[in-house]
Image 1 (cartoon, rainbow, N blue to C red):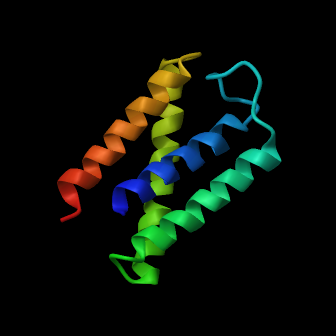
Image 2 (cartoon, one colour):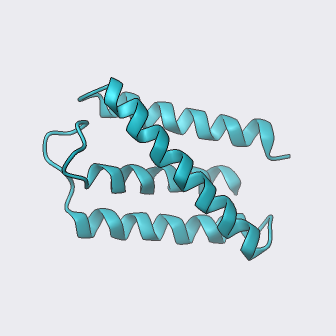
Image 3 (cartoon, one colour):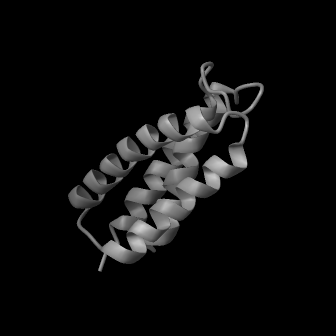
Length: 105
């Protein structure tokens, strides 16, 4: 369940990033309401998914730490891969899934 949770959290953070006016991965930003709604749903789903393994407080902290890390990674990687949204999204997906596969248990 952790892999599904971290994958959905990555997509939620990516949508929130793509709603920014300053992003350079796609030509037009996503609508803010849609993107932030998807991000909030992904956060709630991730907390629910992580709460199967951890307590709700620990699951919330894991989600918060992952979101902060994902947004920092998005800003750093997206600045080097301008206009390559597939590369950035697949790199983040592979990185965070591999971190959870190696380090969770």
